[in-house]
Length: 70
Image (tube, rainbow, N blue to C red; front, side, top):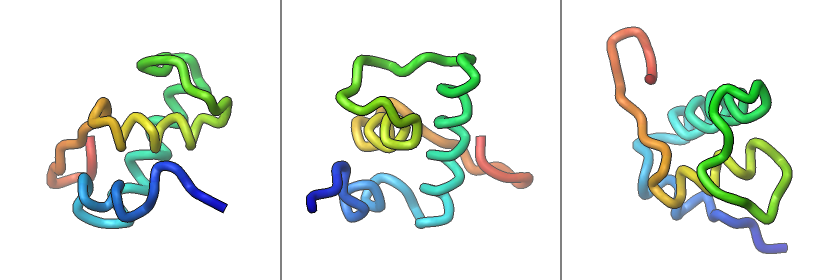
């Protein structure tokens, strides 16, 4: 079974697994709630997969603050 995007490729864009999980969860929640639709069409209907694809394509970025991730 091939997982796309791979964890290795995602971790090269993000500083830790923890940051990756938080960033993907926040983006997936936005997609589910309808606050921000997906940047482009995806082959997957799963919000977490769409979020991870957007992170891999550098469409989602993060800013580390004192209180968390934005």
